Length: 164
Image 1 (cartoon, one colour):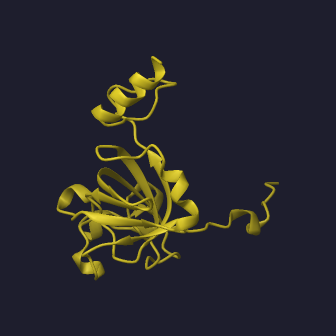
Image 2: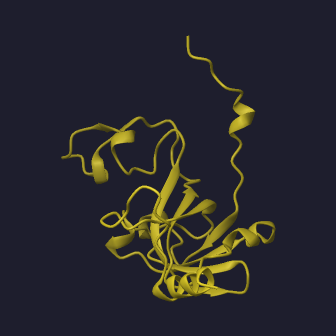
């Protein structure tokens, strides 16, 4: 028998919110690379210290909670096209799923103050909760143990600090 952990253990807390020009679901592209605009990540003050090391040119993964998605859907027609055969949501990028976590690879364009990051492209609605941010890796060049992808200026800064 599979032991089911206490559901209270799985509490997810937002670390910020997206500020975007996308106001309605119909405006959102299916993927960022399909014409999504830039957006601001407004990080809550208590999490601002976690942004240290992220700067313009950084490639990051933004994890969001797709708060308007249906959570009782298990199968969808990929890309919303009824001509596509039904598939399980775990085999698709559908926002409708038991736990509607969005995964968005973006590039940091600017950092304003200590808790505001401009990223592109981001295909989510204004007001979407941000639940985490992680560094991205360049797939082609990544090896086990590699550091995350950083901008050239960040790499130079890291090299100069390590040579001291």
